[in-house]
Image 1 (tube, rainbow, N blue to C red):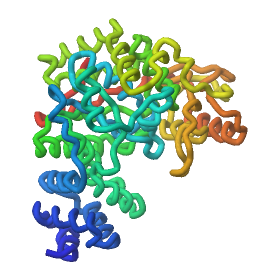
Image 2 (image 1 turned 45 degrees about the vertical axis):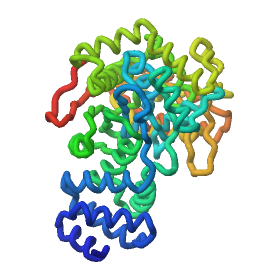
Image 3 (image 1 turned 30 degrees about the horizontal axis):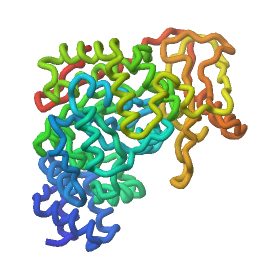
Image 4 (image 1 turned 90 degrees about the vertical axis):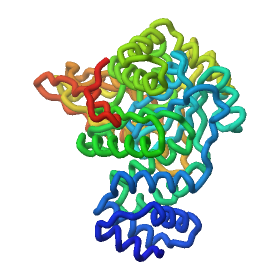
Length: 444
């Protein structure tokens, strides 16, 4: 068995065996296969794809390249959630404590920003004192105490994925559906959960803008989960505009608190309800999807989810006073109004441009060594379908006062908005639910 033959087989559209895939990943991780040959293999996958069985074997080989988190000491069925990335996507900060308050167990490893999308670790670190790096034993203890804990991903989790992604990033193979699926699922499977709910974004602010690609990705990831013996379902959701109103780390934490207090933006609440209900069903907490929806809504209304967030912050060393005093979160030096240059109705908001505008202000890293400013970001005042008058504020920039950053971010926000004479109905947020039973509509 040699890498030349494996490249040739995949180039010609032939499926690889489990043994061949294991050989490929093991030898590449060990340095026995050079980057140029792995890059050739990845390009062959880009053009020829992989079968469902190959995707499962490829993903599990990546999982086996590093550490796997052993959660057997955690009491109960462990359910995880993953989003493929979006703008204003604060769902983990709400879902983890909310689902835990309903009786499910959420032992979750989470990551930092990727591209134009924010990272949950970066958001949580804006809470004073919040700790996201500690021992596995401490992680398990917290979960057993309050049913939820959030920690940052370890460097030894699926290291082959990190190596392969670095190659994909420079060889134009990032947007291969099988490779995206294996990258996501390898980290989720290595993190040790029993069940996973996937939030697969589609639209102009997503990594899979076309619905057809999001559907294919969902089906492959569900198949990988099933092949690995996990209970997995995916919900395809729209990222045709930013989710909620806040984009930026401390700003999104504040919006998460408001949502758990019952005052969240309608679209954000809709998504949280759908994903949370899915997590409760996967975990077996609710006997039906309708019962799960009812439980999620109840624990927002009675503030049980909010109190679990308070307990989570306190258990992880954070200042839980932010629940009642959100001004204890980092505050920007200056607020700058972005005013509409036209009158009419908001017909489109390019989510990616808004995400990049937030990064420009310092909410994300432009270079890997950059430090994030947790206080800066953007609050949207107008969403698709809203009426706008000329000179009316459509967004507020929270900034450090740097004029160049402000001017660049303002230009990006104005370019992201399309305002026209006709009222536009906002695109549906919930597109489809995908499980091993097939594709179904999502209702809440």
